[in-house]
Length: 219
Image 1: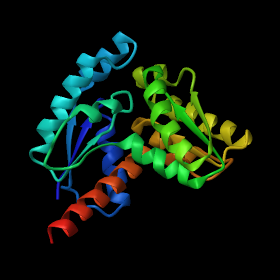
Image 2: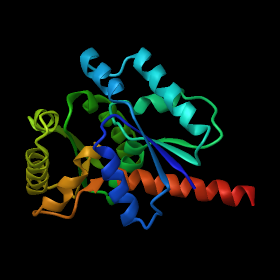
Image 3: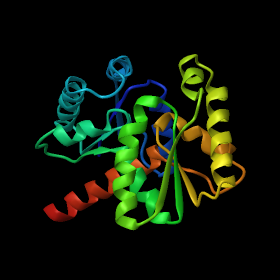
């Protein structure tokens, strides 16, 4: 079994490997491709453009030719999965799986984003899931967090996110969801509520479910 991951930050390879180990996956299941240029282009443009979406979709389509499932791990680029077209295997955006899991909890869902270009696509995918389940939703940007990440200050980055999680729980959140894969490590430092939901684990679970469905259909 091969799950191909398209990342925009090299550090997310380790994040997904940790999530895979937690789920009991073998060490050779995940295959990583890192394209920082795609996110950098989106940041320069102020968000996802048609051209960047097409480039992302082409990269996803190429990965689908040699995998059992493909995960797009960058929430800024998430809408690109809609234009990939026909592929032999499922191509999934991890934030869609996260949205399903978070809204299933019910109550008030607070979604945290670290980078501004993620806010619009994250709001769109979570709003769709929240509407289906009639739950309250709030999307928040963690001010200053992305600057810490880009400066290589991982501890400061995760501390800012964990602090924002605690604030969200103090404000009455039933569950907090961390919109970006790079935020996952902050879950270990949250004290005022349940561990926030993270996109790497949600995405991998969704991929495994889709792979199992395909196998059962073939059988």
